[in-house]
Image 1 (cartoon, rainbow, N blue to C red):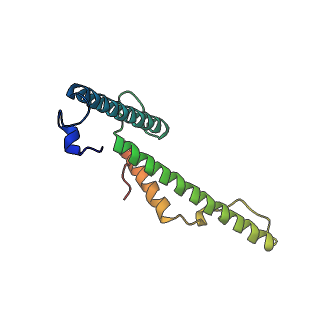
Image 2 (tube, rainbow, N blue to C red):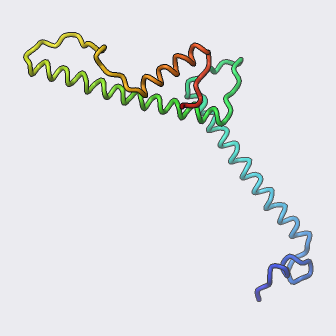
Image 3 (cartoon, rainbow, N blue to C red):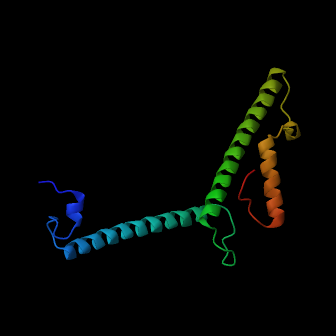
Length: 145
């Protein structure tokens, strides 16, 4: 026999157990849910602490710990900066290989590379300016525009 929800919740309405055991069971369910949430938050905070330990920022005791959002923004910007640096290095290698190939095809002995002719990307220039301005101000840029 299937009982309706209202019959199950009503004391003596065919729910099958005493109200004390239901209250105790409900309390245990709530305690388990709270414990799971507490564990989840501890895991999240541990992960953020590990992230803070590997991203570059001042770690001295006089510097306040970064907030969760500041940690995530700094990590995102750091990853973007590293990706842009890799792309810039790839472009530089291609540029140097092209110069070497062109010199070899023309029968010219390669001379030391002139990197002044290497064009900088607008993104790299912007990131460099942000890093220089934040270094001068003594802070870390958290938001890229």
